Length: 339
Image (cartoon, rainbow, N blue to C red; front, side):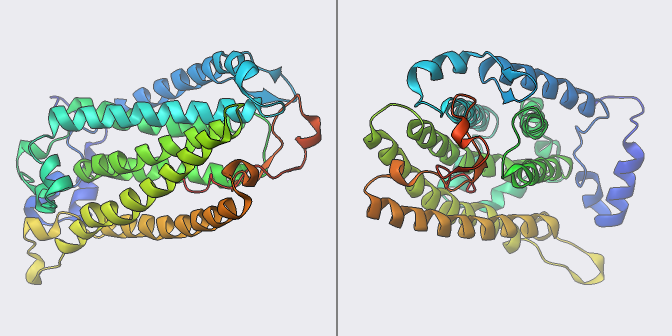
């Protein structure tokens, strides 16, 4: 921790005194939380916005098509009228792939003493090991990951206003805001160990999702999109409906319990009430999304191919070079609500 006054110290004192008793107050707010974190977040938001414009491009009625690297690639690989959709999904695929590798690398380097026990031996008490020591302090490299994640989803929300407004504009805006809030809670409340595992179990699923969608909008053989969609559905079932509840949801519920006379044993109070509530809510959303995926699987089997069925997401048009779908009724979107 850095020496000297911190503008957030009064906020820390309020949160700690209001929520946690005695020895746990010190660890409710993240010890590495700083007022400059907001500045870093804003800087990386701007950087990611510029990078996205350069790599992915955008399109709106005022500026037309923005040139980009993926725009050049889509001109050779995307189907007519699907270039923007190809670019968008390829961009999200690249981000989730980067996030997956980034998270896995940090877990291997900084969390090897507990991550393996949690993921493969289901010893979820390891989340709270060292709670009252500096061992629970978030490493700065993991702090950088958290700020990067919040910056990415914040920039994605802003980017919605820079491109053609789609039918699911408000749904996606709520999704991006909710994601930032969840990551922010994990960061400020020092739930970073659980948060790292949540990221690890979520990002690979989205890599397969956006890979499948990119293939749908490309000229590549449909067998590739069918295969990727099958792998996506399987990974969603295993990682989000089986593994995630066992190692992320049950853990804080198991160790959360109010003790008489305001005395909390650390292993039973570490998750507080907020953590199990948010993770349980996320599990309910996973179940809802998997129902949509299951319906999609049935339609794929009936239609003999995911490409014929398309995508679960309804959006305004696809591309500037396909004006017939700009205002309406492009039905090639049904699998995006699972993100």
